[in-house]
Length: 166
Image (cartoon, rainbow, N blue to C red; front, side, top):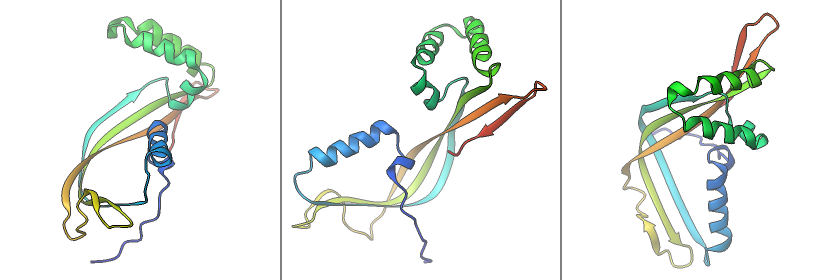
């Protein structure tokens, strides 16, 4: 088989902030001895599970505008037919004044051949998984990707969309 160069990707580029904090806390507080963690995955199949958009809201704008998150939560508790006034207010407040950020979320089921184990460095004892590098398991992973789409309205009234990276 051909050797593939796999660059190291920082956790911050792949995981949500709360999950990163959980891993860092576990690393700092709960591991009393040195362990080796091995995860090797080779994807062989993928299937789109869902794709949906969340208009007028992004992670960035709810961090800087807590009132927006509260407004959105209140709006989402209403039946769909009763949201028109709220959606019009969001469009007027955001898009008509410059930039509207929306979120697109895709979920993909990725099947991988995977080797995973955790073992103690000093003794070589496997704590979790199987340390046999020749035995890969078929494992599904649900991958959730988000992208922010910025919509602007130009002087002529036309809307322009710019999508950020996933």
